[in-house]
Amino acid sequence: MLYGLETVSLRKRQESELEVAELKMLRFSLGVTRLDRIRNEYIRGTAHVGCLGDKVREARLRWFGHVQWRERPGRLAVISGTMNSADYQKILKENVRPSVCDLKLKRTWVLQQDNDPKHTSKSTSEWLKNNKMKTLEWPSQSPDLNPIEMLWHDLKKLVCSPPGTVLQAVSV
Image 1 (cartoon, rainbow, N blue to C red):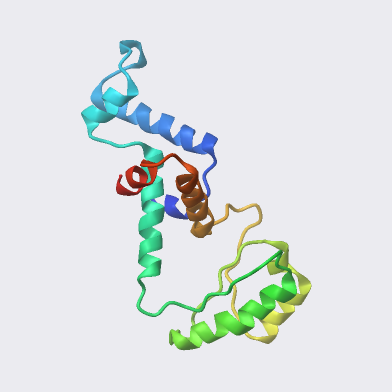
Image 2 (image 1 turned 45 degrees about the horizontal axis):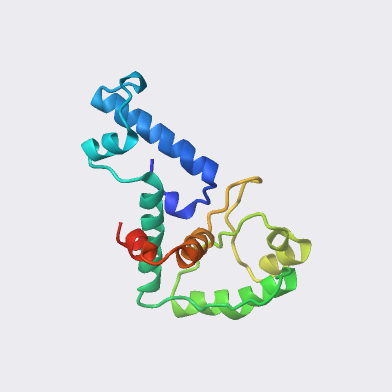
């Protein structure tokens, strides 16, 4: 159930649906029904399993640690305000292309981007074509695969929570 979830944006409702499914599986594997009226905490303790939401947050932080400790990271672009297609093309030109050269990536690399209007605009499509940048085909209405967005969300939640919560959430 957790495979790849460090890269998916989960809403509270989706997270709770996953936890319900997890508990159904745990109850089934332990041979317990809801009619037995056994609390979820006891079920988790018996199975030695933590809360799914905590596991997802831990996986995101672990992913962030892997990215942070890379030997040769790519260039970072700082954006202030709302980005448009011209800003996006400037980032591609000044950061992505040099990063590809710095990282010694072969010509087989492919740019992955979602269907944001600035990524699919006519000017950006022409810029990508003129600069011979291959892009991964991306179906419309796909979930956002940017794990950084969810990481920032989790970090904001931890920073705004009462003292002691940060250590508990990070060490789970």
